[in-house]
Image (cartoon, rainbow, N blue to C red):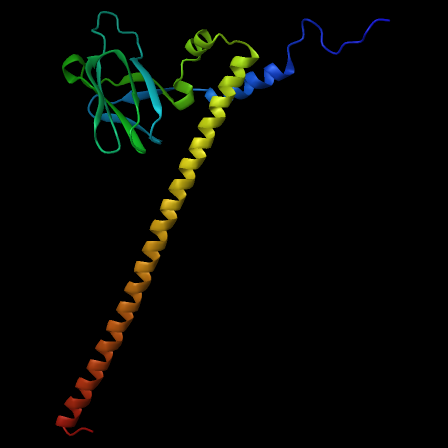
Length: 221
């Protein structure tokens, strides 16, 4: 008897498709286009927790400028405490990579080099910013550990789940810090209100005593 089979050799594995789709959704990155004015600075920031790998590539988007000198920009990346992580001047493309040492907003600012720019012309750059699991080189991991197919997708999914868990823990800690700050502020406001009320009562009593004494001196009461 011939055996019935649900999967043919040309049908893709549903588990593999699901893993690929989920991993792609978790690891997806998008390039952002920034328009830099001829005079001024354009910045992009992202709140990142500590001990996270950040990788970014940027380049000036070419336009029809026959016979014109290529447009150049300068870039500076700073940490939440103002430390300089990357700085480059008079370039048309570049990249930077670092591992965060503290949690907070990391800022990348771009501006036009006026010496190499025609006046009044805006410049567009493309910035691809990757953080955490999205910045990991999975091709190197696959070659090093000799894994592929479903096993590689499972490893990517495991890394994405760990990243999500770390992010949730970070958000939970931030929520606890914000709640503590809120409770402290509410307590200070309550004590300030009580103090203000006490001062108002004292001033009212003093005014009453003063008026009573004044009227007695004038023999009005």
